[in-house]
Length: 265
Image 1 (cartoon, helix red, strand yellow):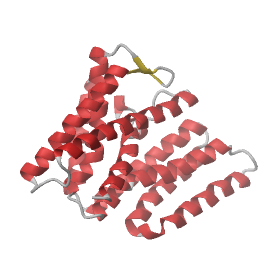
Image 2 (image 1 turned 135 degrees about the vertical axis):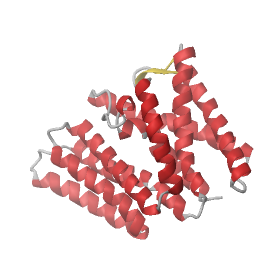
Image 3 (image 1 turned 120 degrees about the vertical axis):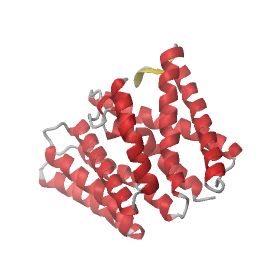
């Protein structure tokens, strides 16, 4: 718990500054770093630390994906195609030493993780108030936090014991309720201090509930990968929170969902 509090005490102010106050290039650089580290963690999970060159390639390509969105978003398909050619070409060059799951970890880690983190750049480019860039974090971290404490105090029935043994149905329900509460609080803050909210209380409650489900699927998805490859955490960048993929697994699912929904508003 001390480690969690320490990470929150340092991380929350840093997050608020980068999202709300920093120049766009600073936010882009932060997203490039997060995407690169996340892609590296996934490749190390699948390949092991002995495949350092694959982890390096994944890191580089994830960073390229985010930076490409920052500079030339209309040509992102070019980068995706180049990524597929590069990873498969490297596997062919190594004569079978690189396995298919390692190639897929490289492609998913670099393209999908980079694309998800780039959602924040696409949201900002859409012209919304930068406060809305906090929504993917709020509707992910709130669900995780409320689920943790609800499960700790009330948890009795296992949610997905073969994927994440500690998660409970009671924790899941608590996470959904916490998400709705924090979503409604977000609308109140935007209405009260920032000239109005793009979304009302009723639609926000539905959005928060839906994002809570998506957040838990994201959390369990990356837990499923960890269990398959027999690791506890993807990394230790955030101390007890683990690595980038341990801390931002839900955000990677929620951010594109919010971006897509907001594109219709």
